Image 1: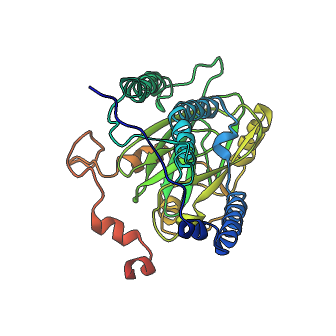
Image 2: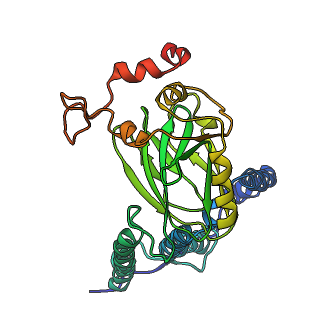
Length: 333
């Protein structure tokens, strides 16, 4: 079988050449540069907290993100560069480029375009399988130090942190000691929410009538932003808190100060606190009611004797229950 005849491209016509050199092309180039500079300015305000981790879990997740990004760029970057090269190489004015209209197949190209992605996907699958187990949020962090237990309740629109081993609680402030594992039990009073401290890692959902677990650690003292990363109503934008990571001595001093608080978190105080409100100031409570978190997490599971039980009946909040706790302006929306 004969090889397909090769042809040379004809030089560009005067009309097409004049179109390419029209005066407006300079304006388009300037506009493109201005758009790029504008985008850079806007992106300059973005936070890169995920790439500035302050704990071991966050550091492992950063490495995972960068590894996955690098592997995917092994395909993306060559494709972009080859696209630009082909567009320049086979432009209309390049009369030296080969024109082969009957070309249809290349075994070498097929091997490359299929083998490389298959290898990358296989590597990603192995990495994901390993990190899914090693970064399991419920898996305790190996440490010689006893973990600090914190019970988290997502309220509308604020965060309640209970320290069951110390009998104190705080609103919109989380105090933790550095180099100490923190074991979180998380639930929500009504609306589904999402608990996230970007510089420590591992976002996890807070759901009404359920209990989720999360284990984190801070290895560097500092104040780290915590937030809700799931929209939950008009107060969502102010539903954030400070995570204060201090030395063990400073943490013990904070606990001692909290125990001197004149405020107690009993059932009546909690009932008032869980009503929807926005921009709540940091508040510290002493004398937390025993098993308050357990009652919140299991409030939709009751037996005939009104005791929490493991049952599938009535395990989700009713529409009437949630609607009664929403502010009037949201009900109007």
